[in-house]
Image (cartoon, rainbow, N blue to C red; front, side, top):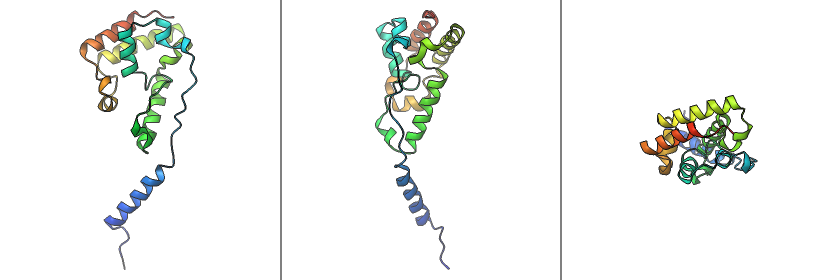
Length: 152
């Protein structure tokens, strides 16, 4: 009687599953967005803040995700899509004008706090995006800007 669960058969099965997974692609169609609703447009953010936010926040917290090359490889692509969707659900800078005053106050404070404490951007994002590795000074700049930006 032959053993079916040999190491070689397990590797083959995993390889077949990996190949089949590549046929389940993610939708990379940009979400509808109106520029006038975007935080950066509404607040007339200075160029340094604009650059930092685009580099460190906008891939997950806006409607304009820039998908890297590795987002074409399942199951990594599924994780990236899920993560960016969840990030935009929690706070979406592209839809800033849709928040009421209380939500904006909360989201401004949370953004400032999470950036200042180094909780955002998350480690896995910084690993693949060196431009998102903010210095203490850049963190301070963003945190102060969030606290000072007008409500609407």
